[in-house]
Length: 147
Length: 395
Image (tube, rainbow over all chains, first blue to last red; front, side, top):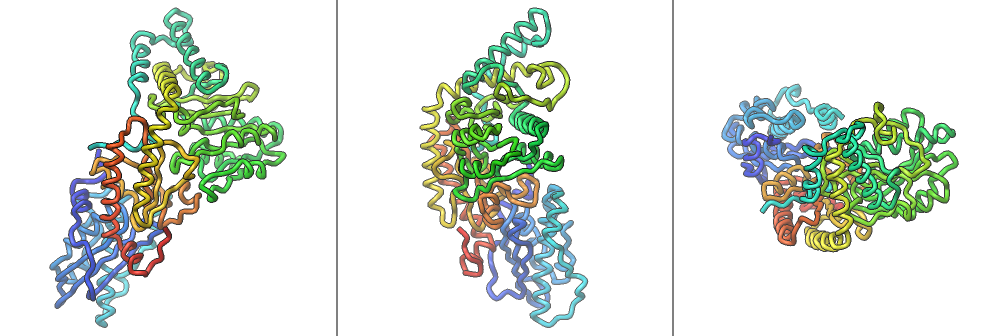
């Protein structure tokens, strides 16, 4: 049995939206090298629409695939739609992730939210801080891996 | 091209080993404990196998105990020495920081029972010295247990010197030789080894079978209780087909040891030389005293699991000491023990070769590994930070 679904392998080996946006409207980075995964998302926002999105990821195949899928899911969408993206939706769009790799989809959701927060901060747009609670990644990682 | 380069995990069985097993499934299938002729025929084969394994290791047949593999042999050796030591009030054990979990977890269990364990530092030269062992020995030391060769990074330990130190101090010496048997020269008497663990599937034998060598005079404690098999020290009907496959594989390996070592070492050195060209990479393990087939590298800026998956898609089957290949938070304890920090240890790759690998396969590996490393670096934010000076290179 393969470790990952065909969709995960597709997005891992042919990731969409890889790269950097210079002078992006918002940049979000989550994770740390200790855990073994770091995700960075760049957003280009015009009139509340995400006109472009790029990512860079250091991590598992599932982390790269989650970033790729998540960027596809928010490209061309409004910032409000992007705010509503959940890790569950990312994992489902990938036809599921193994239980111990689910945190990769959590990283994708949080990287996007961080990038949006950066955009709000840069433009003095008020927002509800409750929406941006960050997970302790060491803790999350330990939880899913049953340290 | 499909290249199997994970021979430290397990090996393809040799044809001689497969052929040696076959008669023991359907012809000689008696239970060696049975009194009838079918049982006695099996018993004869079993004892013949024991003598042949003993000959390969340089010991007596009665010093060989068949087990289910390396882990069981490690468990039994360590627990036996601990029980024996405890009876004399000795509850200190010396080992190394980069042992296999079969050893480390057994030691953890003993620590909970009140034993004290000293794990020797392996960060200098990715190896230990006999001097370190000598300095760690105390009056209450009941066992020194060090691996013969490390499974992840390939360092070969100075076993004969450690054996001499232990003999002089009167401390039993066990070695987990799972990665070494069939790959390098071993003579338990000449090297003063008191106990040695081996596993058949690491030298082209079958899985699920191994052996423990235990010097006469050292009392063994049962790990598996039951019948009187293996001189009462290991219960359970013997895995005769497995044992016959193991001995055939072992004799084959020992008979061709020098030529295999020369061939595999040449392939290894070509791989090491080639991969050393990848910028910001480092060889793990002792560069000189090294298993013939082991190549272990860390590549900065990338993560091991994605590296392995992409290599697999390009036909190269390898392994990594990265986190989560083992299902734990940290990268391998071996890489951390030799001083690789987390950031770098995550990007590790182990290629382990056997005599079945060819130069064409090595060329293929040397073509695809740099491609995949470079691909992953190009999508890695860590690599970008390294290149733009936001992070400092470690390698």
